[in-house]
Length: 255
Image 1 (tube, helix red, strand yellow):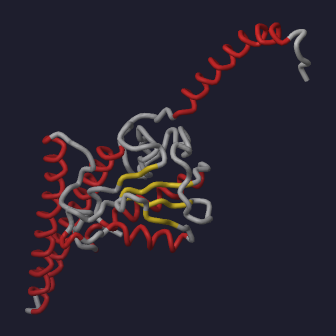
Image 2: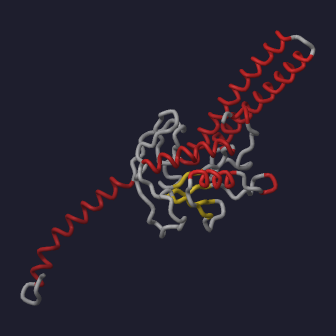
């Protein structure tokens, strides 16, 4: 669904889920403001086109309608840039764990698209679950959560079970179709999202880049680090084994 067909409301007035630079927030606001300006021009053109049609000026109505479509396309472009920008800021390497996606700053329909693509990618790559940061609604009008209901709807449509975590601004989704039971702490998958492709083919620095979030490099997950640790442990065990066997010799039987 294009941005021209839904209200431009987002998760709240605070698009970032962390301390950010003034330049970063200014860039995000600039893109959203440009989109709103184009939305205003689009509406003005369509209103004038309707007036022209009512007075029988078909040529003027057609011209104004085409101009309105051009403004709508520009609005969509600016909103897409803002969505990609805030996603990279909130989901860059080190900001969220490998099994987590942060939807702060997204419009509801943007969040829906990101989540659907992220779930598909995760399932295709064997990820068992996903934590979704949806926000508590503290910065929304009347403190109403906007993203969470849509996340629940997506899960229901995909037949996935979900639950709200102790932090009410986070949700847990079981990607395997079973009960949404939170795993023990630190038992989530590590490094399983290497080279995660965005919707436009760009690789994001970490798993959170949904298909569509551009820029960034290949994410090198925890597998390499874990392999290195395993190698060190194996070397240490090989060094200690002869000493242990020597001490055991004569006092017990090694089975």
